Amino acid sequence: MAATEQPSRAAAALKRRAAGNPAPPVVELRGVSKRYEGGDVGLDRVDLSIARGEFVFVVGHSGSGKSTLMRLLIKEGDATEGSIRVAGRDLGDLTRRKVPYYRRNIGMVFQDFKLLPNRTVHDNVAYALQVTGASRKEIRAKVPDILRLTGLSTKLHNFPDQLSGGEQQRVAVARAFVNHPPLLLADEPTGNLDPETSIGIMQLLYRINRTGTTVVVATHDVAMVDQMRRRVIELQRGRIVRDQAAARYSGGEPNTAELGALLKEHLEP
Image 1 (cartoon, rainbow, N blue to C red):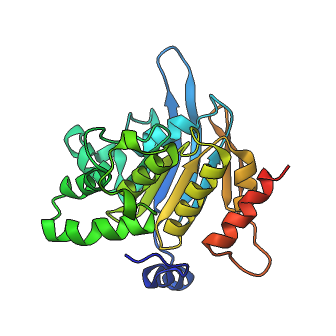
Image 2 (cartoon, rainbow, N blue to C red):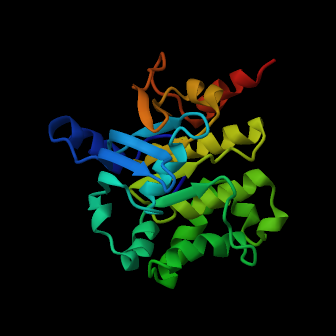
Image 3 (cartoon, one colour):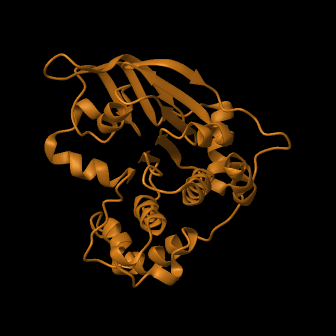
């Protein structure tokens, strides 16, 4: 896949289809609660719908329910009440044996990268294809493309401990996106990175979203969220207290470079 600033044909087709015949949401929660042993409440009767192609931020203080929501979406635990559907799958119907297969078909990016330390950049990304049964031919075709998209073409033979934090997170994003999943979840993807590096990661997630993949980012970075002008869902004590639609940019949506310039504004003294 070549890097491009224009939404793909697939993304454009999704928008046209949504205008006349709305597709089912990629994420849908109905009356979802999560209570832990001891009585702590992670989520409290949450209703939420995220459409195909959206870029959504989930914000809130520690203990607000952000982490609970992300864990439920990757089936790391079950809801106490309610139903969760992701990309058409009812997660309540997933047996334990099917959970690994489910996770291979959505993208996941974490604050601590979770790379395989004894594998090169190339092999970390290729591994995501291998576990889904991709052929060697597919791997040879897809890995170089995704490394170009994420700016890692010159690092393919490096091991994780030879990379900066930002480069490691780019490998994690490349691994999450190489299968072109319908949904990419990023849990505090810039939490361990300096502000300048964080901008690069947000630009990358924005570029991926413009290909048609739905992106959900849980973050504490309020300034970054404000500048991105995407949909914002705020949680407080397990409940949604704000669901704010994406704001519009004057002059239309920025390309990746323009977005980077906008994000850098909040770094200026």
